[in-house]
Amino acid sequence: MKTATYTSISFIIFLTCFFLTIESYAQSGVEGHGNANAYEMAAGIRGGFGIGLTYKLALGENKSSYAEGIGYFYDDAVSIKVLYEKTFTTSVDGLRWYVGAGPSVGIGSTAHLGASAIAGIEFNFSDIPFNISLDYMPTFRILKKNALKLFDAEVGGLSIRYVIR
Image 1 (cartoon, rainbow, N blue to C red):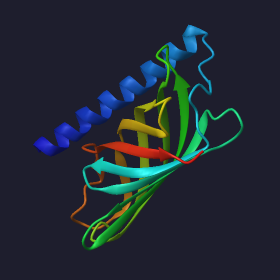
Image 2 (image 1 turned 180 degrees about the horizontal axis):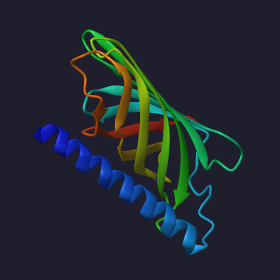
Image 3 (image 1 turned 90 degrees about the vertical axis):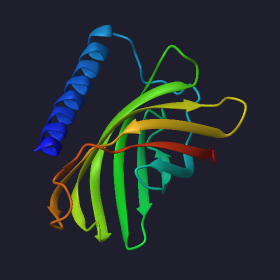
Image 4 (image 1 turned 180 degrees about the vertical axis):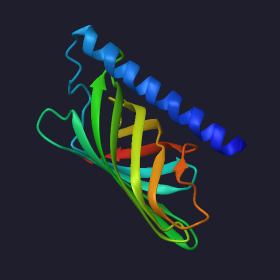
């Protein structure tokens, strides 16, 4: 019962923060799609609730939209997420925030088919070809093995990527 309550509260908080952020951004009238410290592609490692790999690729010339592939590898399973992300600049040089969503597939003990949302911040270093990001990524599983939760709100991560170009 406590897990269901925690999951419901987490989901409501996430949605509230997401829509308030979008609403405040829309009302600000500020053009937030910039390419300050933007990159075309980056790859790296991801930690959090599991260790994995991350790859981001810019979609379009203004580099405000990205496709991100995230793979988690376990002893007896693999989980893959492919996310579309929209990035927005901040007043801090190199710091951007992003939101997005996409499909999630698990094979092995984490077998599932579902969808993930993502919201986070990313810092692009200007002197070295690396960036770092911190995010929250809940997953809703449509088809799943019995042991898996239908909604997993306890997921987030820290990614460190090498900027390829």
